[in-house]
Length: 180
Length: 176
Image 1 (cartoon, rainbow over the protein chains, first blue to last red):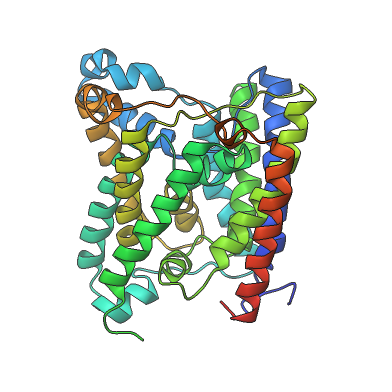
Image 2: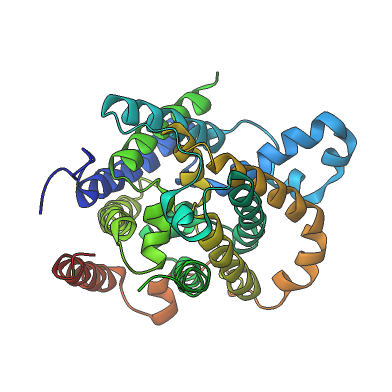
């Protein structure tokens, strides 16, 4: 096993262990500094982002919506975490020169060709479905997959198993036919 | 910016940095895992989980942090988990990695992000409906695996770690 991947990335086990340490430090730091234990997560931020955008056209509608009221449309810890993920990935990819402008992912291109419009439509549709599911299950691979599993939650074991199990079936159907 | 926002930003920058270094932000890595060809994201996730699990449960035992349980709502987890899995396979990103992917130049994930924002808005509109149907089915409440099966977490954790390490050896043997 090597410390670096062929393209200059880190061994995924090492990056994972460091992410585990980050999760511990973050839980401790939020408890100490914000007096509220907060766990890594990402999908609620999409609700808040949707709320902010809708506020531009219909302020009262957002204010009277039960779900937006429940999740509170504001720039909170997690919202900044998600912005930070963008910045961290940018810094890392520029520093090791793995930053690359890519319009269509290679695996997709092999199966469906290089049309950006085609990719865009499917990515958009997948995004709509996935986010409805993530909100219904109350978490995504960060909130359930990392934070929930770390706490041994029954809901997270079930959610992650379904995310991946259904993912395997659908991926096989969508991408698998021509290969293997 | 408030203390809360700064703390989130700093944590996020480190998180994004590690996600990118682990090369898990790529569409090809996520779909590769679902095609059972490249287990990079599982090596990353499971390593993070076993380390984080030990630390978080120790801190919680010591009374230094609170656990934040997500309820085991049967309808929500079953239907939501299925929808997420299907969407994830087509989109090739999860919510956190879609943002990081733009950061490393894979700008096509913008379309996935737009879809997810629209999905969140649709969910917000339909929330009253879901609350009285899917989410009202059966709620087991905020249960952890230790309470559910009546075993100490300190029996589950070593078993989970052992199983994970065995899986890692298998990944390496099969060069996944």
